[in-house]
Image 1 (cartoon, rainbow, N blue to C red):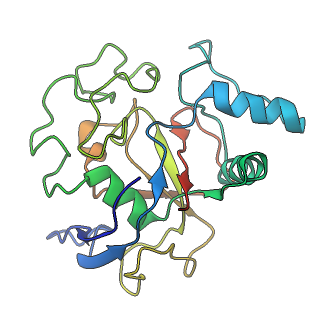
Image 2: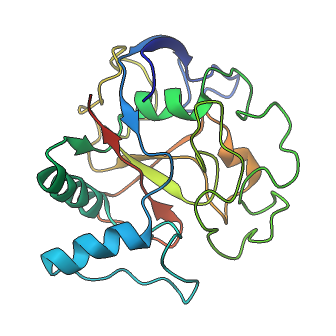
Image 3: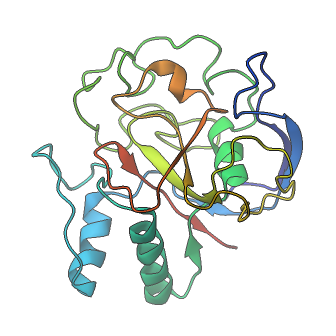
Amino acid sequence: MLPAGTFRMGRNTLSGNDTGPERDVQVGAFWMGVQEVTYAQYDRFARATGRHLPGDFGWGRGDRPVIHVSWDDARAYANWLSGQTGHRYRLPSEAEWEYAARAGTETFYWWGYKPGINNANCFDCGSQWDGARTAPVGSFEANPFGLHDTAGNVMEWVADCYNSSYQGAPNDGSPWLEGDCSQRGVRGGAYNKPVERLRGTRRGGLGPGSRLSNLGFRLVREP
C-alpha cells in the first residue's frame, strides 16, 4: 500500500523535452505490485483464457518479467485478475507510476544522482544481465517504497495516452486520456536501454499494439 501524497512530477530542462513542465500532483493511496508481472502469473491467465503464450527468447519464464505483451494484453490480464479476486486491478496512471518509482526522492534515480554499479539492469548498469536479457524480478534492491525494478529490467505500460509535454495534464493522479491516444505511455527504462533512460522522470510512448522484448507491466490494485 502506497500512502496518499503530493509530489513534484516531471523535470524542467533547457532542452524542453517531454518531462516538463514540472508541476505538483496529488495522488491518493493505492496498492501497487512490488514486482513486474511475471511469466508465471501471466501464463496462468493465458492458459485460462486460451490466449497466446508470449515468447521468452529462451531466457526462461517463471519469475522473469513477462514480455511481448501489448497494452491491450496488459489490460485484459488486469480485468481477468479483477474477476478472479473480487478486487479491481488496472494499469497505473503515469502520475501513480512516477510517484511510486521515485518513492519520495528528488534525485535522478531513487538511489541518488549517479548511476552507480549494479543498481539495476540496463545496457550499462554493471549487472550480469546488462544489454543481453531480462533479470528475474526482485534481483536488485527495492526502492524506499519497497518496489523492485521500477528502474530498468523492462519498460512498463501505463494507462495514459502519451503526450509530448505535461501541458494540460491532470494534477489529481488520474490517467491523462486525452491528446495523442495513438500511443500509450511507457516508463522505467529496460535491460537494453542506457542508464540515463532509467531516471525517474523519463518518459516514452508506444503504439498500444506493440509487443517488444523489453516491454512489460505491473498493476495497481484500488483500495
